[in-house]
Image (cartoon, rainbow over all chains, first blue to last red; front, side):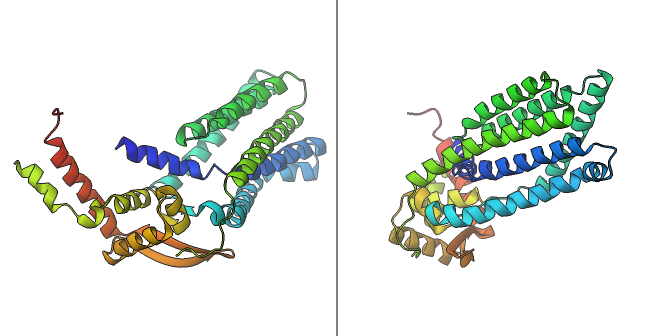
Length: 210
Length: 105
């Protein structure tokens, strides 16, 4: 049974072995960073700033759709011809768990804002964001094999969140800086992994399988 | 000879073959996988893999379909309900037989 678990873990790790998920994640983080910085720049009281802030959920959903399409297109272009295609099993209750995780995330964000408001120090939002990012990356690392780099990225996420919370930047700019720097971390990691993947897996001759 | 051990003779020979068992086990952990992925995972030659997949398909354990992802042609393989049941029965049969010899060298 342990062998089957290991096999499942290894096959789940296959999705991450090309670094494309990190590259797409980096782009999404960069756009999120720009979003927070623009909202802060425009100000909550301005019409555009208010509209943008109210549309955060739509922005997040849009970025998720963009990320999925981008990854699918890149994998079809670079990965499937080299190492093959896998469609992962959707276990029962995955959608419910995702909704629950989203709800928990929203509650966490609201709690972070409430706590920081109570402490009269909005800097905590960035520190907590870094902590949450680190937690997600550690969880990811535990779920798949050969993904130790996520531990390093988790440590960077926590360190960046904490460091930015002491810079004295306003929350919007600090969040913008956090996401932009994490985008850089994702981009560097994704690029290195992708280059290694391309080097180790040259395209096989011809496209015929049988 | 115990009854459990005699059960080994009744094991599904389609799945019992090591290469096919590998294929069925890999496919049991995913929704589907293509020919190239299975070839890399099992390290079988193209001809060998093709022959084993054909046998599994003939037994109704694997469904094979040819499709495209973008411009890239894929030969997608997925385990059928009969294949999942056969693997489960095989696993139970092996556990029963090997479990009877537990504790012996």
